Image (cartoon, rainbow, N blue to C red; front, side, top):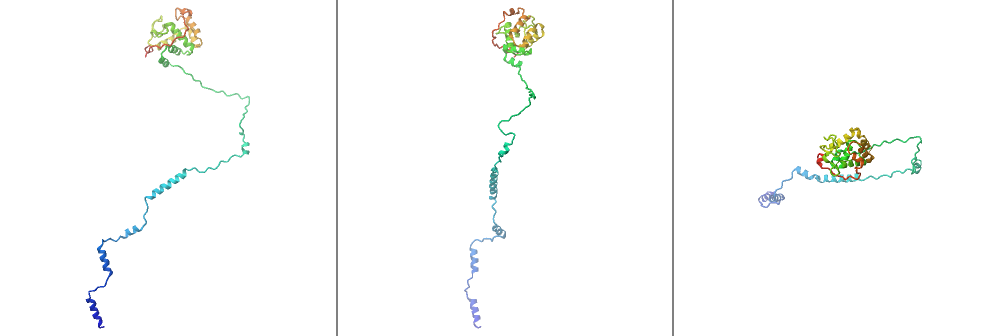
Amino acid sequence: MAGAPGERRAARGSTTRRPSSAPSGRRAAASGPRVAPPSPRRAAASARPRRRIGAAPGATLAVAGLLSTLALAPLPRAELPVAEASVTSLSPFAGDVQAVEVDGDIAPASVSREGYSTTTGPETLVDSGTNYDWAKLVLVFGDWPLTDENVRLMVEWMREENGPDNWWNRNNPLNNGYGSGGGSGLGSYDTLVTAAEYAASNLEKRSFYAGIVAGLEAGTSADATARAIWASPWASSHYGNGAWWSTSPVPVVAAPASAWGR
């Protein structure tokens, strides 16, 4: 017991201290930068697994593309069943040739077919503007057929009246006195179109031109119609009863545009 106080004093008066790990840890912490401890929310967030947001759409598109490719691929087609030979042999349509029997008293059905024809119009003839066109224009206004014989007769008649090179003289190719202002046939018309109208009208109105009209309506013989012209009072000379009438080919000659009123 006597030694205990002395040991306490020695312990109190001694300058030697026991080593401790706490002060050294504090000094180490003080010497470096202080780092704040993570908050509970951040620690929880860091602990959770991160979702790969960017990869999800790409994977979805890849799967969709694969499915579409598979959808376009044709499905395997089962083989079509082939009819048995016994079935095809029983068919009434078997064989290469089929025969149909019809009663002899059945009359064939009539078939109606539409017919079409073209008519040369005045404008087409005026645009061309030759002596042959004027001859056709008279036939059009008289409602006579445009046959080769009728056209040939008209151009031969025009040549006998005014010659082939000046057949449009005074715009009166046939020297027609009706509607031209000259009873002797020396009158004139404003255009060749008007002259064609009056020529057709004069032939239709006069009974003594009936033979000419009949020949034009038939349209089969230029010579027969020419004889009707010689016998008519159209020309006082009667064309020498045909002695002065030429049947040689008539050249194609175009009239000036002014003669047609253009």
